[in-house]
Length: 339
Ligand code: NAD
Ligand code: DAU
Image (cartoon, rainbow, N blue to C red; front, side, top):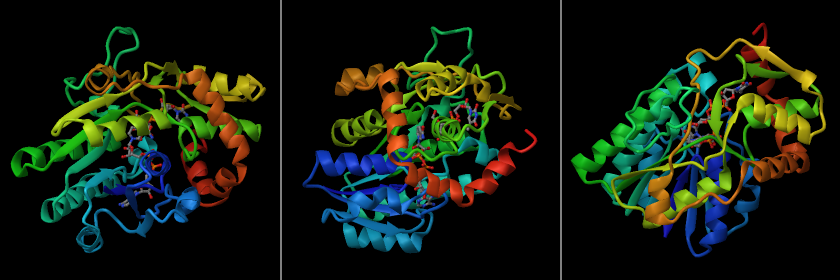
């Protein structure tokens, strides 16, 4: 199989590149990534020497880059991770989210139509379902839950999902979609809750918790997400949507306190800051479909995964410290100053 992985220099895409190279050593993986602020070639260091891996710098929304690559490589499978992925940045500047997340998806699928593929897979998110109320713990997102978005980010991801399903019906493109809950693990960019809190706690800096910290996320260790996508692209049914999540719900405050406890740091570092506009209250996935059809189950509990993640950040300080030294500082100032 020749597999195109877009966005493979980002958090989940890179973990997926490593998962594929390890579990399918006969397959070839080509990574197409624009290397935005969230993309990091250092993350792919260990893949670069593998003869079955090729990295190409380019924009999924740029036809002049995407079409020749498809012509040259004759891909069997395309897995689209490339996206602008941070909700807070989408509140600040929605436009690039529409361009990459929607138009980029269109360009990739147009190339799939022209050059032919066995499967186009869209990596989507549980955020397309909106949120659930805190006082109804019996409710979960299923694949039938209506699309109901809150942020420019989730609206762009939902738009892409609709376009993917439209290409399946109108052009008979063989597609699949996975909608996953919050991931965590190695190579997670430190603008997101868990790596931001780990890096700041280690430096004994204040930990900015939005609102009261009572919002709930359903955490999934990134390797479990990669295993689920791998199953769907090889064995999942065409035209189907699969939800991925591991019943690991935690409030943000629980997550932050767990990190502080494991690092033996004081809870006095917690600082409550102005809430995110339109902040979703609770995400919770019902993964029954992928379990019943493909036998997928998460392997990593939150208690185990968060320990492993913290250990990874302790062992790979130079990876995240390099990021903190760059444009990240002005991002942090902009987002959190006077908040
Ligand atoms: P990320 O922000 O860490 O990485 C995104 C990658 O895409 C980066 O390497 C970036 O350089 C690249 N990219 C951005 N724009 C591009 C473009 N126009 N052309 C080519 N490459 C481009 O994101 P992530 O957290 O790894 O998320 C990956 C995918 O998974 C996204 O589609 C996201 O919506 C989805 N998702 C993420 C989570 C999560 O918890 N992080 C959960 C569910 C779904
Ligand atoms: O659910 C899947 C989604 O998970 C993905 O589609 C997104 O790409 C990914 O970024 C993530 O979105 P969230 O908005 O849930 O993740 P984030 O890490 O930004 O925030 C998690 C929670 O923590 C959320 O309730 C906001 C809160 N938060 C976040 C930051 C960065 C804080 O309280 N303080 C912070 O500084």
